[in-house]
Amino acid sequence: SAVISQKPSRDICQRGTSLTIQCQVDSQVTMMFWYRQQPGQSLTLIATANQGSEATYESGFVIDKFPISRPNLTFSTLTVSNMSPEDSSIYLCSVDAGVTGELFFGEGSRLTVL
Amino acid sequence: QKEVEQNSGPLSVPEGAIASLNCTYSDRGSQSFFWYRQYSGKSPELIMFIYSNGDKEDGRFTAQLNKASQYVSLLIRDSQPSDSATYLCAVTRGYNKLIFGAGTRLAVHP
Image (tube, rainbow over all chains, first blue to last red; front, side):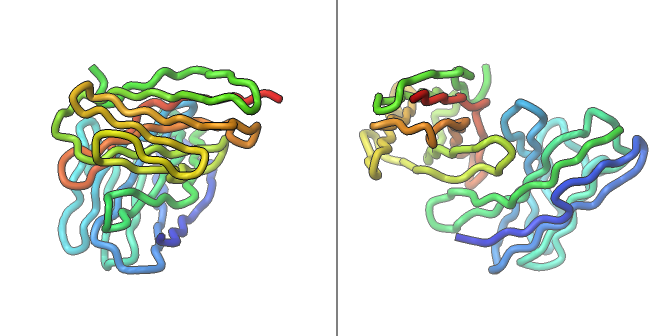
């Protein structure tokens, strides 16, 4: 299994600001995934990030709002731009194990937007 | 129709009983199926995966898959209070994207 570190673990942000979440993996992985978990809800896939190419976004998510970087095989960032209270969520970075498709998750970044 | 459907619960079972968690999915092309456990305030952790029809057992956990009925379930035998958590069903879409159900909250009472 991979060890995945996310920063920050939590933050309180003001409306209209942007925050960048970092995800570091202890091994090289091809694909990284960003999920959102709103309060009391399940996980919703935001985008898939491959190294060296633009991220692929799911329906309802756009690059202007959630820009993603993937500069190498162990690191990715997700920015939540122009935040509103509706963006208050846990944002989770995940990687696949490469064998049977299961995902491993970081500890998540809990964002509260006031 | 949601891609992955689960009863939100809570499912309440007494300690020592069998807990049965169910999940249906809409995409017949899904190949792999996963059960995750999520404790409150924690990230999901993988319990089991299954990709062939039938049963797969791992300790107190048994995953069951019926692709014809598009149905996957998780049985937890000898349920313990420490099993109290939300159980998320996830299925693959396409090559390796995982789509999650809303989760079933399980409460095991002494």
